[in-house]
Length: 264
Figure 1 (cartoon, helix red, strand yellow):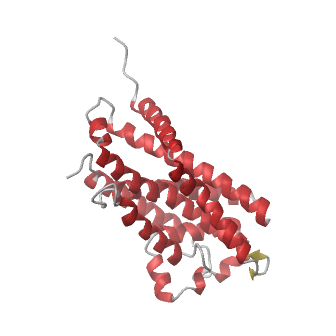
Figure 2: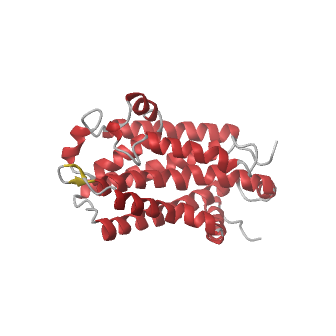
């Protein structure tokens, strides 16, 4: 009797299926992968002034769009597609197969990682070619970029799975999830200079991970001198890591407690 594939092996297979299904959905591909690049092209073309010595708006904006891309691929993507799969009965059928539960979530994580890497490449290449965005040269910057991306992706993925229990139906999932993401984008300094936002808006945004992802990415793509123009006059790297880790734990706890395989 042949041994059954391991949980990880099944998760990888499931991830390949998730990627193929995603690529067949043209609207999702355009919104997830190309929409951030389109926004960068629009805002980068409209706002061309320097916001600080040696820092133009495009350099600032690409950091926010990278952070926002992690939220789009992780949180928003899963919080919308999982309710749709639940309505269609896909989750109920998967639950009745011998596939371990963990393999399903591994597959979703692989989809998020593939989408995230593609989105990052498109944003960085587009920023460099279209707007002359300067990429970091110090190895320490790329090390920080790596752990920020990994921790941010993990947090957003866990929160997306947890939030998928909120929409009452797959049809209404986009109407519930998208406004949350758009509001956080405006409040967190993705489209505007964060320190120019009203203080109450800054304090509200500080409760959520997107603000800290944006600030962390600015510490990677902007010169260290720009840290003096942040609210705390520093990058607050340790605090960024702590808050993202806390949100990761929150997402994991709520995912385990509230995830639904079928409609109530």
